[in-house]
Image 1 (cartoon, protein in one colour):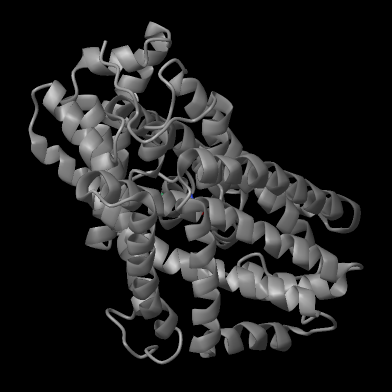
Image 2 (cartoon, rainbow, N blue to C red; image 1 turned 30 degrees about the horizontal axis):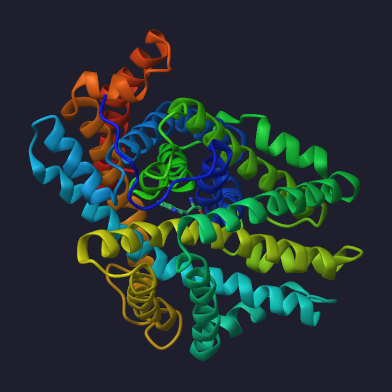
Amino acid sequence: MVERKSIHGEWSSRLTFILAATGSAVGLGNIWRFPYVAGENGGGAFVLVYLLCVAVIGLPIMIAEILVGRRGRQNPMDSIRTLAEDDGRSLHWQWVGLMGVITGVLILSFYCMVGGWALAYVAYAVQGSFIDIESADAEGLLGRLFADPWALLFWHTVFMGMILTVTTRGVEGGLERAAKYLMPSLFAIMLLMVGYGMSSGDFDGALAFLFRPNFAALTLEGVLVAMGQAFFSLSLGMGAIMIYGSYLPSRTSISGSAVAIAAADTAVALIAGLAIFPVVFANGLDAGEGPGLIFVTLPLAFSKMPLGEVFATLFFVLLVFAAWTSAISLIEPAVTWLVERQGLPRVGASWVAGGVIWVLGIASVLSLNVWSDVTVRGMTIFGLLDYLTNNIMLPLGGMAVAVFAGWVLSRRTTAEELSDDSPLWYGLWRFLVRYIAPAAVGVVLLTKLLGLA
Ligand code: TRP
């Protein structure tokens, strides 16, 4: 049995790993993106397909990522290279790891800016900007933020500063403490919001919308969006979960952890829906509002509810927390890569990675205003980055990891890492990771690239 000691630290317990990985998974994807894509795609049936994708595609790939990370014990690139070497396979597989590092850097460049929007909205909420507003005011608020590159740059910079305060400290001091305190507070605030929805919002309407499948409202495009959302929400496809797995102590069940993480991520997405839709319906707002759902509609809803300012502040603080713990996992592959491949000290590596991402993020900031005319196929720089990473790079990376774990690594290797699973469960995982996951992702990619959906 190959057992490497982690060269960059270990989680102090399995629970810490689960909290940290859940912190990575739960982010803007759950709280901002899930409700709006569910809203746009008709609710119930979309949610059902999403859940299916999490279980059948996301879970096996997540197990594969954790497995490779824990056995390799290094940054994604070196972990993959080491495992390929152990099994006498082509070392070129390591480029999958490098692609993950690059994907993370690209995603974080705009994710950091969106985290900045959430920070700006905390400030608005505290200042009482949502008191007695109409829809034109809510749109104006977001419009003014987007039109002001300096304000966007300021919040983008603050958010990057928050990321660096955690990242420079490393696993034990930084990531662990962030995970331990941020995740439970996040759950608490969300439950409070659901409680508000139950007492004062249209909770029955929200339940019916999210859980009563209306298959007439589901399109092929909706199926594809649901699958992409599962990928993004579980933080799969660029080595984030792989790197967290590399900190995982050897004697812990990988599958058990993965099920817990996926369940928690899904629960938070559903809870976010249950927190947001009662407010949306009670105020006669449009569920299919789109990406502006929380930034335009919620302030409007908050302005109408008693104690709205307080709830608005709590909500956007929560969004910042969630984005923060996710952002940390997006930068971590780049940081460990700089430490282990380029020999930088952790603090230096954090500043270099953070600096590069911050500069790249300026392009997204400017694409909302000064460069809003600069488009490729109708997409701004921000839109293009989002499109390339979410629709192409993440699925490619996830598919590559599935093929690597299912076809390239020897059966003995994966069976050893998953040794505490029953033969039946192991067989099921191997079937899903060899056939179902790559095929399903392949279909998504092809339909996207060929423009069939
Ligand atoms: N899953 C996070 C969210 O829902 C975003 C995220 C963090 C992510 N790390 C990732 C997405 C790695 C893809 C890959 O907001």
